[in-house]
Amino acid sequence: MNGLDFLDGLSDVDMKYIAEADERPARRRVQWQHYAALAACFALTVFSGAMLLFGNTSDTSSMDMPEELASIVSSSSALLWMVLIAGILGMIVAIVLIAKAPKEQN
Image (tube, rainbow, N blue to C red; front, side, top):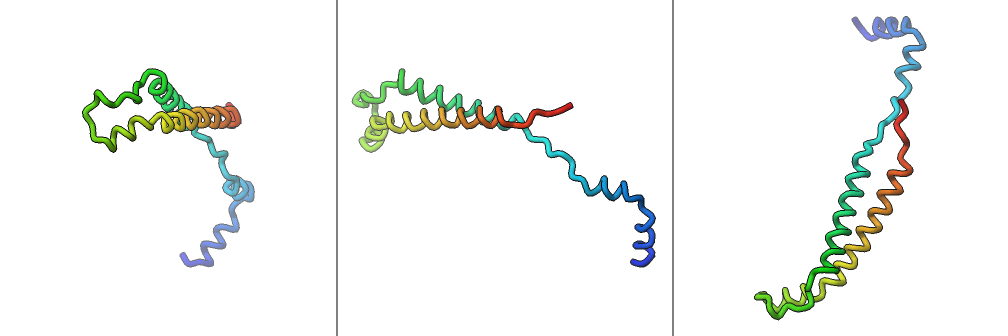
């Protein structure tokens, strides 16, 4: 079989099959990724909020650690606040993505 025979064989194909092959199937979105992002941001928010509420990071005198590490631990409340805010913003974005995701039609 050469190229001409192949083209001659393709000319006998019904046009409806060519049209079906040209259509792209609907791409299904993976919904669990949005929920996983929401869960991760929620865990980040709960952890940083708990550390801010219950973590006593201001008193490092009783801890046996180098001075450099003690200064990082004592100034970590600003970092925890940033993590808390980032977690809340991440949860808002994940909720918006879940709300705007196309629903699967059966």
